[in-house]
Image (tube, rainbow, N blue to C red; front, side):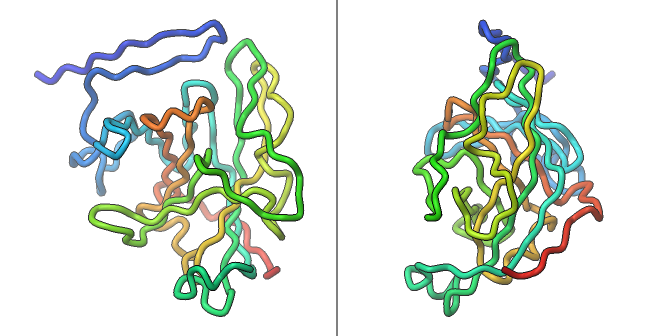
Length: 228
């Protein structure tokens, strides 16, 4: 008989904080196609044991401090100014801007500041510990797929951005966009098997990640976009 022991602590804000003592391995058959079940599982990564909280495309991701769901996504051609740093990925400066519309809900009884406090600027930028990444089925190493970090103040991105918005009132939600830049031919991989939106907890805990599969139950509501 397999046992799963979990200590759940509720903080003063009403958030549920998960501290797993034992969870299934994410590489088990239950979490892989064709079954691809939802739930909590663990992997061994650089920070140690990482808990993955996995839901399907049309589900709601319940993170320790917030809930999240993907509404839709769009892609458009874009220019990459620093393409010479990765000329194979961005030939002659050509890239694709992928933007995902996401709803973040605050189930707690205190205002919640989601994401970093960014300054609106005409200059795109990254953060050392991105709050969101887009995983795509592109090999990046043994057993690893490529992921693109959220880009702040992305040129040509739809708005409003999910980041830099005022705190979310208790039991309320906000909607905004998360944008990443990928290779020109990589945008078509969004919605394919192993593509996912990965979200970090508000506190940036590297040992916990929320994953919304973009391929399972992916609907026809993807919004086409003209090039920018």
